[in-house]
Amino acid sequence: MTLPASAYQDAAAAIRARCDLTPRWAIVLGSGLGPLADHVEVSAEFAYEDLPHFPRSTAVGHAGRLLLGRLEGQAVVVMQGRFHLYEGWSPQQTAMPIRVMHALGARSLVVTNAAGGLNPQMQVGDPMVITDQINLMFQNPLIGPNDDALGPRFPDMSQPYDPAYGETAKAAARRGDFACHAGVYAGMLGPTYETRAEYRMLRRLGASAAGMSTVPEVIAARHAGMRVLGISTVTNVCNPDALGETSGQEVVDAASNASSKLLAMVTAVIRSAG
Ligand SMILES: O=P(O)(O)O[C@H]1O[C@H](CO)[C@@H](O)[C@H]1O
Ligand SMILES: Nc1nc2[nH]cnc2c(=O)[nH]1
Image (cartoon, rainbow, N blue to C red; front, side):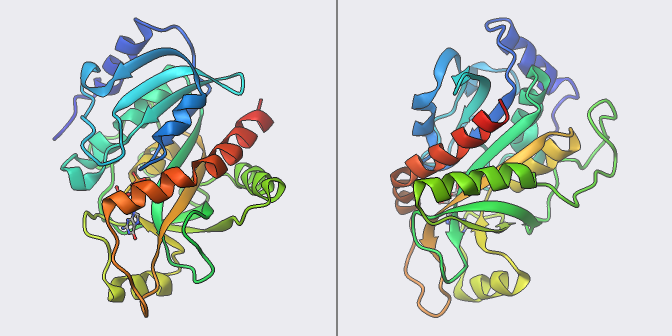
C-alpha cells in the first residue's frame, strides 16, 4: 500500500495533540521483548489502531502500543511491537513508525529483535550487538519519490550502526558478566524460518544472525540521519548440521527470558548519552 506523503506527519500530529514530551530516543521492542517497556515511566500510551495511517500489530509477542515517557531520565518513545513484511505490510508501512518517531524529535534509535544465531559460539539467550546488516528482503522502504526534507535520494549505508553505542552496550555486558556477541544481521522476508541450506548460505555470506525485521527500519532511520544501536537476542541456534525445529512461541519465550540482559545494555547506552 502506498502511504500519503503526509502520513508520518499526520500520525506525529495526533501524538503531539495528546502529549508534549519531545523524545530524544526511539526504541523498537522486538518479539518477546515488549516487557522492557515496564521500566518506562509512561506519560502517554497509544494503541497503534488509534493512530492515523499506522499499521496494526499482528505478529506473536508484539503488543501494538506506542509509549512516550522516560527511561533512565531520558525522554523516549517506545514501540511495543513492530511491523514485518511477512504480515503483508509494505516496506513503507514497516518503516513509517521510524519516521513518526523522528518527526516527534527522536534522533537516536534503538532497534531490538529476536533472531536465529548462526555463529557456532552462540547460545539461546545471548545478545548480539549488530555491527552491520544484509538486506536479503530485496525490498526497500525508500522506493518511490524521495522526501528530500527527510534525507537524500541515495543514502550512504557505510556504517548503519553506531560503533560508539555498540561499544557501550558491549561494556554493559562485560560489567553484567554475560556473553555478548557482535555481528552482521541478515534480514529475511519470512515468515518461514530458514532451511539448513539457507542457514549454511547465510553463514557463508558473513551473517551471524537471521531475522525478519530491523533492516527496513534501519534504512529509514539512516535516511533521516538517526544514530542507531541494534541488538539481537539469539532465540534459536541455527546449526545446519544439527538443526532442531523452531516455533514462534519458542522464539518469544527465549527472548523474554533474556530481556534483563537487553535492558542492562539499552539503559547503559541511554545513560551514557545523557
Ligand atoms: O524481529 P522480531 O520482530 O523481534 O521478530 C522475529 O521473530 C519472529 C519469528 O519468530 C519474526 O518476526 C522475526 O523477525
Ligand atoms: N529469519 C529468521 N527469523 C528468526 N527470528 C527468530 N529466529 C529466526 C530465525 O532463525 N530466522
